[in-house]
Length: 203
Image (tube, rainbow, N blue to C red; front, side, top):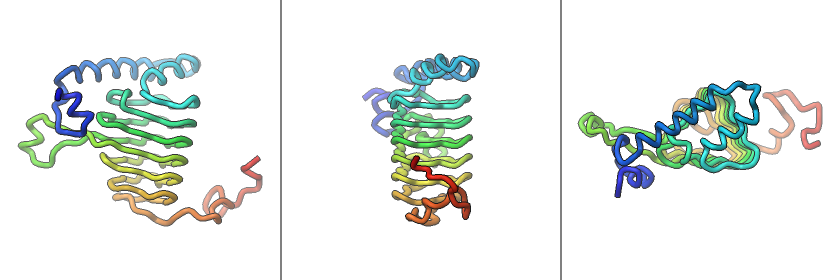
């Protein structure tokens, strides 16, 4: 097994060997072009982000700036929206479902290092995949750590640090992120706290 194969198998690997450094350099060049393209050039921006992200749906919006390690290990579904300054360390797979909205300054980290200093100083690191379901809203300044699975229809409150799995239909917040409550039919009435819709959002 070479180091790339080890990385993708979620085993300890050394990130400067077997072409990995060169792959990251190519990704950095693509990300640089995307981040430094004028917002007037929407067609170019759309093409560039599609060249970065490995798998994506037809409708894809990522605001500048955006950062990632490889890009090829990121999969997003249909109707994906990411606001300013999304960072994804995709040394392992990051699989995101459809109708996902990500607020500014969100960081998704599959990468990690051993706790023991001697092991850490050896240069070995790891990546553990992250999955995010459909219809998820991730609040601003959230950090998602390696190995986390976020279920469908989840809302993650702003400023959260997600260190463990979050089940379907949960509203979760905090550091560490914990389930606050679950969505109910009553939630459909409101657009913000106790403010009720004065329009029919289904139209």
